[in-house]
Image (tube, rainbow, N blue to C red; front, side):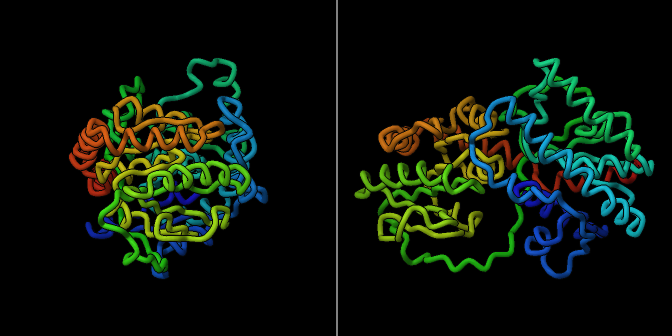
Amino acid sequence: MTGHVNPTIGVAARLVERGHTVAWAGYEPLLRPALGPDAVVFDCAVPPAAERWTERGPEVRSMRSIKVMWEEFLEPLAHAMVPGVRAAVEEFAPDVVVADQQALAGALVAGAAGLPWATSATTPAELIDMEAGLPKVLDWLQGLFAGLRKAYGGPSADLRYSPDLVLAYTTEDLVGPIPRREPIAYVGPSLHPRPSAVDFPWDRLDPHRSLVLISLGTISVGAGSRFLKEAVEAVRARSSRVQAVVVDPTGEVGASDDDVLVLPAVPQLELLGSVDAVICHAGHNTVCEALNQGLPLVVAPIRDDQPIVAAQVEGVGAGVQVRFGLAEARHIGAALDAVLDDPAYRTAAGRVRAAFHDAGGAATAAAHLESYAARG
Protein backbone atom coordinates (compact mmCIF):
# COMPACT_ATOMS: atom_id res chain seq x y z
CA MET A 1 0.00 0.00 0.00
CA THR A 2 1.55 3.24 -1.19
CA GLY A 3 0.54 5.15 1.93
CA HIS A 4 2.80 2.91 4.02
CA VAL A 5 5.76 3.50 1.71
CA ASN A 6 5.62 7.26 1.19
CA PRO A 7 6.57 8.37 4.74
CA THR A 8 9.63 6.13 4.75
CA ILE A 9 11.03 7.65 1.54
CA GLY A 10 11.86 10.92 3.27
CA VAL A 11 13.39 9.12 6.25
CA ALA A 12 15.61 7.05 3.95
CA ALA A 13 16.71 10.19 2.09
CA ARG A 14 17.76 11.84 5.35
CA LEU A 15 19.66 8.74 6.43
CA VAL A 16 21.56 8.72 3.14
CA GLU A 17 22.36 12.41 3.58
CA ARG A 18 23.85 11.52 6.98
CA GLY A 19 26.16 8.96 5.34
CA HIS A 20 24.22 5.77 6.01
CA THR A 21 23.23 3.02 3.56
CA VAL A 22 19.60 2.04 3.04
CA ALA A 23 17.99 -0.95 1.39
CA TRP A 24 14.34 -1.84 0.95
CA ALA A 25 12.48 -5.13 1.24
CA GLY A 26 9.00 -5.24 -0.22
CA TYR A 27 6.93 -5.61 -3.34
CA GLU A 28 9.22 -4.24 -6.04
CA PRO A 29 6.49 -3.32 -8.59
CA LEU A 30 5.17 -0.90 -5.94
CA LEU A 31 8.51 0.23 -4.53
CA ARG A 32 10.51 0.81 -7.69
CA PRO A 33 8.34 3.58 -9.21
CA ALA A 34 8.29 5.38 -5.84
CA LEU A 35 12.01 4.98 -5.09
CA GLY A 36 13.61 5.39 -8.50
CA PRO A 37 16.08 3.20 -10.40
CA ASP A 38 19.04 3.59 -8.03
CA ALA A 39 17.41 2.27 -4.85
CA VAL A 40 18.51 -1.12 -3.52
CA VAL A 41 15.33 -3.18 -3.45
CA PHE A 42 14.96 -6.79 -2.35
CA ASP A 43 11.74 -8.10 -3.84
CA CYS A 44 9.18 -9.82 -1.63
CA ALA A 45 6.10 -11.77 -2.57
CA VAL A 46 2.58 -10.64 -1.73
CA PRO A 47 -0.54 -12.77 -1.24
CA PRO A 48 -2.41 -13.59 -4.45
CA ALA A 49 -5.48 -11.68 -3.23
CA ALA A 50 -3.57 -8.55 -2.16
CA GLU A 51 -4.60 -6.32 -5.04
CA ARG A 52 -8.23 -7.38 -4.78
CA TRP A 53 -8.21 -6.69 -1.03
CA THR A 54 -6.84 -3.15 -1.36
CA GLU A 55 -9.56 -2.33 -3.89
CA ARG A 56 -12.46 -3.54 -1.79
CA GLY A 57 -15.30 -1.19 -0.96
CA PRO A 58 -16.75 -0.06 2.37
CA GLU A 59 -18.96 -3.09 2.81
CA VAL A 60 -17.04 -4.25 5.89
CA ARG A 61 -16.86 -1.65 8.65
CA SER A 62 -16.06 -1.11 12.31
CA MET A 63 -14.21 -3.80 14.27
CA ARG A 64 -15.24 -6.45 11.77
CA SER A 65 -13.23 -4.48 9.22
CA ILE A 66 -10.13 -4.72 11.42
CA LYS A 67 -10.49 -8.49 11.85
CA VAL A 68 -10.99 -8.98 8.12
CA MET A 69 -7.93 -6.80 7.41
CA TRP A 70 -5.71 -8.98 9.59
CA GLU A 71 -7.24 -12.29 8.56
CA GLU A 72 -7.47 -11.74 4.82
CA PHE A 73 -4.53 -9.43 4.15
CA LEU A 74 -1.99 -8.71 6.88
CA GLU A 75 -1.44 -12.28 8.14
CA PRO A 76 -1.12 -13.67 4.59
CA LEU A 77 1.16 -10.75 3.78
CA ALA A 78 3.47 -11.70 6.67
CA HIS A 79 3.72 -15.29 5.46
CA ALA A 80 4.37 -14.17 1.89
CA MET A 81 7.05 -11.61 2.80
CA VAL A 82 9.13 -13.57 5.30
CA PRO A 83 11.34 -15.39 2.73
CA GLY A 84 12.16 -12.16 0.88
CA VAL A 85 12.82 -10.19 4.06
CA ARG A 86 15.00 -13.00 5.41
CA ALA A 87 17.05 -13.04 2.19
CA ALA A 88 17.40 -9.25 2.34
CA VAL A 89 18.63 -9.35 5.95
CA GLU A 90 21.14 -12.11 5.18
CA GLU A 91 22.58 -10.30 2.15
CA PHE A 92 22.39 -6.67 3.30
CA ALA A 93 23.30 -7.34 6.96
CA PRO A 94 21.58 -4.25 8.40
CA ASP A 95 22.40 -2.69 11.74
CA VAL A 96 18.72 -1.76 12.23
CA VAL A 97 15.54 -3.05 10.60
CA VAL A 98 12.73 -0.51 10.19
CA ALA A 99 9.54 -2.56 10.03
CA ASP A 100 6.20 -1.20 8.94
CA GLN A 101 3.73 -1.70 11.75
CA GLN A 102 1.44 -3.80 9.61
CA ALA A 103 4.10 -5.63 7.56
CA LEU A 104 4.95 -8.08 10.33
CA ALA A 105 7.66 -9.94 8.41
CA GLY A 106 10.13 -7.21 9.35
CA ALA A 107 9.62 -7.69 13.08
CA LEU A 108 9.55 -11.49 12.76
CA VAL A 109 12.80 -11.75 10.79
CA ALA A 110 14.65 -9.10 12.80
CA GLY A 111 13.58 -10.68 16.08
CA ALA A 112 14.60 -14.16 14.97
CA ALA A 113 18.00 -12.82 13.83
CA GLY A 114 18.56 -10.87 17.05
CA LEU A 115 18.67 -7.56 15.20
CA PRO A 116 17.47 -4.22 16.58
CA TRP A 117 14.19 -3.26 14.97
CA ALA A 118 12.15 -0.08 14.98
CA THR A 119 8.48 0.24 14.11
CA SER A 120 7.32 2.55 11.34
CA ALA A 121 3.75 3.50 12.32
CA THR A 122 2.09 5.10 9.32
CA THR A 123 -1.42 5.01 10.77
CA PRO A 124 -2.65 6.05 14.23
CA ALA A 125 -5.05 3.10 14.31
CA GLU A 126 -2.55 0.63 15.73
CA LEU A 127 -1.02 3.25 18.02
CA ILE A 128 -4.23 3.65 19.96
CA ASP A 129 -4.78 -0.13 20.14
CA MET A 130 -8.38 -0.26 18.96
CA GLU A 131 -8.82 -3.77 20.33
CA ALA A 132 -8.01 -2.78 23.93
CA GLY A 133 -11.66 -2.51 24.90
CA LEU A 134 -12.58 -5.74 23.14
CA PRO A 135 -10.83 -8.57 24.97
CA LYS A 136 -12.02 -11.31 22.59
CA VAL A 137 -10.68 -9.47 19.57
CA LEU A 138 -7.41 -8.76 21.37
CA ASP A 139 -7.05 -12.41 22.40
CA TRP A 140 -7.70 -13.48 18.82
CA LEU A 141 -5.08 -11.07 17.52
CA GLN A 142 -2.49 -12.20 20.07
CA GLY A 143 -3.19 -15.77 18.99
CA LEU A 144 -2.50 -14.75 15.40
CA PHE A 145 0.85 -13.26 16.46
CA ALA A 146 1.70 -16.40 18.46
CA GLY A 147 1.11 -18.52 15.36
CA LEU A 148 3.49 -16.36 13.34
CA ARG A 149 6.16 -16.56 16.06
CA LYS A 150 5.81 -20.34 16.15
CA ALA A 151 6.30 -20.52 12.40
CA TYR A 152 9.22 -18.10 12.05
CA GLY A 153 10.63 -17.25 15.47
CA GLY A 154 10.72 -13.59 16.33
CA PRO A 155 10.45 -11.27 19.30
CA SER A 156 8.34 -11.97 22.35
CA ALA A 157 7.00 -8.40 22.14
CA ASP A 158 3.80 -7.45 20.34
CA LEU A 159 4.83 -7.56 16.67
CA ARG A 160 3.22 -4.15 16.07
CA TYR A 161 5.40 -2.32 18.59
CA SER A 162 9.18 -2.37 18.83
CA PRO A 163 10.10 -2.32 22.53
CA ASP A 164 12.86 0.18 21.69
CA LEU A 165 11.52 2.69 19.14
CA VAL A 166 8.17 3.40 17.47
CA LEU A 167 8.26 6.13 14.83
CA ALA A 168 4.84 7.82 14.60
CA TYR A 169 4.35 10.17 11.64
CA THR A 170 1.98 12.41 13.55
CA THR A 171 1.98 14.47 16.75
CA GLU A 172 0.59 13.78 20.19
CA ASP A 173 -1.56 16.92 19.93
CA LEU A 174 -3.44 15.35 17.03
CA VAL A 175 -3.56 11.75 18.24
CA GLY A 176 -4.16 12.48 21.92
CA PRO A 177 -2.46 10.76 24.87
CA ILE A 178 -1.60 7.09 24.29
CA PRO A 179 -0.93 4.97 27.39
CA ARG A 180 1.69 2.66 25.87
CA ARG A 181 4.83 1.22 27.44
CA GLU A 182 6.82 1.36 24.21
CA PRO A 183 8.78 4.57 23.48
CA ILE A 184 6.88 6.48 20.79
CA ALA A 185 8.73 9.16 18.85
CA TYR A 186 6.20 11.62 17.43
CA VAL A 187 8.10 12.92 14.41
CA GLY A 188 5.23 14.47 12.44
CA PRO A 189 4.63 13.85 8.72
CA SER A 190 7.62 12.61 6.75
CA LEU A 191 7.28 14.36 3.40
CA HIS A 192 9.66 14.11 0.48
CA PRO A 193 9.32 15.00 -3.22
CA ARG A 194 7.95 11.98 -5.03
CA PRO A 195 8.70 11.07 -8.66
CA SER A 196 5.74 12.09 -10.79
CA ALA A 197 5.09 11.93 -14.51
CA VAL A 198 1.72 13.66 -14.14
CA ASP A 199 1.17 16.50 -16.61
CA PHE A 200 -0.97 18.85 -14.54
CA PRO A 201 -2.81 21.78 -16.19
CA TRP A 202 -1.59 24.52 -13.86
CA ASP A 203 -2.72 27.24 -16.26
CA ARG A 204 -6.36 26.21 -15.77
CA LEU A 205 -6.44 27.07 -12.06
CA ASP A 206 -8.53 30.17 -11.37
CA PRO A 207 -6.80 32.47 -8.85
CA HIS A 208 -10.08 34.30 -8.21
CA ARG A 209 -11.85 31.25 -6.76
CA SER A 210 -11.17 28.97 -3.81
CA LEU A 211 -9.55 25.75 -4.98
CA VAL A 212 -10.71 22.44 -3.47
CA LEU A 213 -8.98 19.09 -3.91
CA ILE A 214 -11.32 16.08 -3.91
CA SER A 215 -9.63 12.70 -3.54
CA LEU A 216 -10.70 9.34 -2.12
CA GLY A 217 -7.49 7.37 -2.50
CA THR A 218 -7.61 3.75 -3.67
CA ILE A 219 -11.20 2.53 -3.49
CA SER A 220 -13.50 0.35 -5.54
CA VAL A 221 -15.29 1.99 -8.43
CA GLY A 222 -18.73 1.33 -7.04
CA ALA A 223 -17.87 2.66 -3.61
CA GLY A 224 -16.36 5.94 -4.71
CA SER A 225 -18.33 7.05 -7.73
CA ARG A 226 -21.49 8.07 -5.86
CA PHE A 227 -19.67 10.21 -3.32
CA LEU A 228 -17.46 11.84 -5.95
CA LYS A 229 -20.49 12.77 -8.05
CA GLU A 230 -22.24 14.28 -5.03
CA ALA A 231 -19.10 16.26 -4.16
CA VAL A 232 -18.85 17.53 -7.73
CA GLU A 233 -22.50 18.62 -7.60
CA ALA A 234 -21.76 20.51 -4.39
CA VAL A 235 -18.89 22.35 -6.07
CA ARG A 236 -20.92 23.18 -9.18
CA ALA A 237 -23.57 24.77 -6.97
CA ARG A 238 -20.80 27.12 -5.77
CA SER A 239 -18.93 27.54 -9.04
CA SER A 240 -19.00 31.34 -8.81
CA ARG A 241 -16.52 31.12 -5.93
CA VAL A 242 -15.18 27.53 -5.87
CA GLN A 243 -13.17 25.48 -8.35
CA ALA A 244 -12.33 21.81 -7.77
CA VAL A 245 -9.67 19.34 -8.81
CA VAL A 246 -11.08 15.81 -8.66
CA VAL A 247 -8.85 12.74 -8.61
CA ASP A 248 -10.86 10.16 -10.56
CA PRO A 249 -8.63 7.26 -11.65
CA THR A 250 -11.51 5.23 -13.11
CA GLY A 251 -13.30 7.95 -15.07
CA GLU A 252 -16.54 7.83 -13.13
CA VAL A 253 -17.17 11.55 -12.74
CA GLY A 254 -17.11 12.67 -16.36
CA ALA A 255 -15.21 15.21 -18.40
CA SER A 256 -13.34 18.24 -17.11
CA ASP A 257 -14.47 21.82 -17.51
CA ASP A 258 -13.38 25.16 -16.07
CA ASP A 259 -15.28 24.55 -12.81
CA VAL A 260 -14.26 20.94 -12.15
CA LEU A 261 -10.91 19.62 -13.37
CA VAL A 262 -11.16 15.82 -13.45
CA LEU A 263 -7.85 13.95 -13.63
CA PRO A 264 -6.79 10.32 -13.11
CA ALA A 265 -3.85 11.45 -10.95
CA VAL A 266 -2.33 14.66 -9.60
CA PRO A 267 1.02 15.74 -8.13
CA GLN A 268 -0.61 15.97 -4.72
CA LEU A 269 2.21 17.40 -2.61
CA GLU A 270 2.85 20.16 -5.12
CA LEU A 271 -0.83 20.84 -5.72
CA LEU A 272 -1.64 21.28 -2.03
CA GLY A 273 0.38 24.47 -2.06
CA SER A 274 -2.35 26.02 -4.25
CA VAL A 275 -5.38 24.52 -2.49
CA ASP A 276 -7.75 26.16 0.02
CA ALA A 277 -9.51 23.04 1.34
CA VAL A 278 -9.50 19.27 0.87
CA ILE A 279 -12.36 16.79 0.64
CA CYS A 280 -11.07 13.26 1.25
CA HIS A 281 -11.68 9.84 2.77
CA ALA A 282 -9.59 10.61 5.89
CA GLY A 283 -6.64 8.57 4.73
CA HIS A 284 -3.81 9.35 7.13
CA ASN A 285 -1.29 10.47 4.53
CA THR A 286 -3.69 12.78 2.71
CA VAL A 287 -4.91 14.28 5.98
CA CYS A 288 -1.37 14.88 7.25
CA GLU A 289 -0.23 16.32 3.92
CA ALA A 290 -3.17 18.74 3.98
CA LEU A 291 -2.68 19.74 7.62
CA ASN A 292 1.02 20.21 6.96
CA GLN A 293 -0.09 23.03 4.66
CA GLY A 294 -2.57 24.34 7.25
CA LEU A 295 -5.55 23.33 5.09
CA PRO A 296 -8.98 22.58 6.58
CA LEU A 297 -10.71 19.37 5.54
CA VAL A 298 -14.04 17.75 4.85
CA VAL A 299 -13.52 14.09 5.74
CA ALA A 300 -15.70 11.15 4.71
CA PRO A 301 -14.18 8.02 6.27
CA ILE A 302 -14.86 4.72 4.54
CA ARG A 303 -13.26 1.91 6.60
CA ASP A 304 -10.26 0.66 8.59
CA ASP A 305 -8.39 3.50 10.37
CA GLN A 306 -10.19 6.29 8.52
CA PRO A 307 -12.95 6.86 11.14
CA ILE A 308 -10.21 7.31 13.76
CA VAL A 309 -8.33 9.82 11.61
CA ALA A 310 -11.57 11.68 10.83
CA ALA A 311 -12.39 11.90 14.54
CA GLN A 312 -8.94 13.34 15.20
CA VAL A 313 -9.45 16.01 12.53
CA GLU A 314 -12.80 16.98 14.06
CA GLY A 315 -11.39 16.76 17.56
CA VAL A 316 -8.78 19.45 16.93
CA GLY A 317 -11.30 21.61 15.05
CA ALA A 318 -9.52 21.36 11.68
CA GLY A 319 -12.40 19.95 9.66
CA VAL A 320 -15.93 18.62 9.34
CA GLN A 321 -16.90 14.97 9.04
CA VAL A 322 -19.66 13.74 6.73
CA ARG A 323 -21.01 10.22 6.29
CA PHE A 324 -19.48 8.58 3.26
CA GLY A 325 -22.39 6.28 2.49
CA LEU A 326 -25.19 8.81 3.08
CA ALA A 327 -23.81 12.27 2.34
CA GLU A 328 -25.53 14.11 -0.50
CA ALA A 329 -24.42 17.24 -2.30
CA ARG A 330 -26.23 19.42 0.25
CA HIS A 331 -24.38 17.84 3.16
CA ILE A 332 -20.99 18.01 1.47
CA GLY A 333 -21.70 21.57 0.34
CA ALA A 334 -22.61 22.69 3.85
CA ALA A 335 -19.42 21.15 5.23
CA LEU A 336 -17.39 22.80 2.47
CA ASP A 337 -18.97 26.18 3.21
CA ALA A 338 -18.04 25.78 6.86
CA VAL A 339 -14.35 25.03 6.31
CA LEU A 340 -13.99 27.74 3.65
CA ASP A 341 -15.98 30.49 5.37
CA ASP A 342 -15.35 29.96 9.09
CA PRO A 343 -11.76 31.00 9.87
CA ALA A 344 -11.75 28.83 13.00
CA TYR A 345 -11.12 25.72 10.88
CA ARG A 346 -8.13 27.22 9.11
CA THR A 347 -6.81 28.53 12.43
CA ALA A 348 -7.02 25.04 13.94
CA ALA A 349 -5.36 23.54 10.88
CA GLY A 350 -2.63 26.14 11.27
CA ARG A 351 -2.00 25.03 14.84
CA VAL A 352 -1.56 21.46 13.65
CA ARG A 353 0.75 22.69 10.91
CA ALA A 354 2.94 24.44 13.48
CA ALA A 355 3.09 21.30 15.64
CA PHE A 356 4.00 19.21 12.60
CA HIS A 357 6.83 21.54 11.67
CA ASP A 358 8.12 21.62 15.25
CA ALA A 359 8.20 17.80 15.30
CA GLY A 360 10.80 17.77 12.56
CA GLY A 361 9.46 15.10 10.23
CA ALA A 362 11.88 12.90 8.31
CA ALA A 363 15.00 14.54 9.77
CA THR A 364 13.86 13.80 13.33
CA ALA A 365 12.99 10.21 12.42
CA ALA A 366 16.43 9.73 10.86
CA ALA A 367 18.10 11.13 13.99
CA HIS A 368 16.18 8.68 16.18
CA LEU A 369 17.25 5.76 13.99
CA GLU A 370 20.85 6.94 13.99
CA SER A 371 20.88 7.08 17.80
CA TYR A 372 19.21 3.68 17.98
CA ALA A 373 21.84 2.16 15.70
CA ALA A 374 24.62 3.66 17.82
CA ARG A 375 23.09 2.20 21.00
CA GLY A 376 22.66 -1.16 19.34
